Amino acid sequence: MTAYRRLLMFLGFLLIASTLFADEAIVRRNVHLRETPSTKAKSLRLLLPEDEVDVLDPVQKDGFLHIQTEDGLQGWAYARFIRSQPPAGQLLPEAAQKETAAATAISADWQKPEPRTGNFKLNDETCGPTGSGDKRDHGTNRLKNRTDIPSSYHDVTWRAIAELPYPPKAPKSREQYSAEMLAPITKVEGAAVQTVGYIVAIKPQRSNSESCNCAWHGEDATDWHIALTEFPGDGEKTSIVVEPTPRIKIKHPKWTKKNLEPWLNEDLPVRISGWLLFDPQHSNHLNKYRSTLWEIHPVTKIEVWNDVTDQWENIDNLEVTKAGK
Image (cartoon, rainbow, N blue to C red; front, top):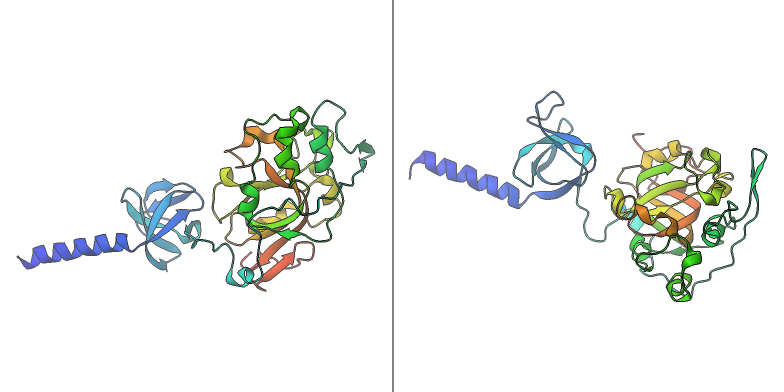
């Protein structure tokens, strides 16, 4: 065998080995795969969120990673938009994991206090406890519009909420549900829970007309839809939705999209607390903007992981944004 052929075989072995031992990763945002580690280099392909790639070398070069796509195309991509697959069960920074001993299921034995609500007055207008006076889902609206704040919360995993059952092809109003359909819902609905996840979308419903808010418009008069995923970089269609409401937001001036944006599409978690709610009104969003009709709604507390102090911080008290922001 000639030295040239031996060299080719050796190089081929190195190529195969680099693929076999590469770290699997996920694309977090749209990013160009380039010929060399430079934004001026030729783009080989546009990579999209949730594309799977192999990281051929974990050492960055000028902020780029050397990666390979599933079909074998190699190139360089901006490292910030590529994340390694997290080890099974590892959702949080190590310091945060030590604090968390979350329940993996929602117990029917947990207290579910009767919701307190009332009229909501804003801009010289009044919205009642069940929202609009039409024939929409007054029962669900009353739960959305509760204003009582839990004295404590049950710490639960993200999956404990995401995997809660509900009737298939559920009607959009619980007033159309039979007692049999409502039974598994009422067993757990109304428990005070908190869970940890990663924000992939923040959607103030400023221009949408929701009956719970009397079809009002504007930031102060409407809910937010926040998509919370189990792992950083997961798609919005896999999320559970958590919703701050105008009746709660009015008491939290720091609850703004701007203040939460440092944790949007990032690898740092948030901890959301509030009331467990089944919302049948958004079944058209399933597998597109959410994975379940179970929500935390209303949200009564928002905490963020601060990577400067390595601890949870209530966003109401947060004065310094996280590192690098």
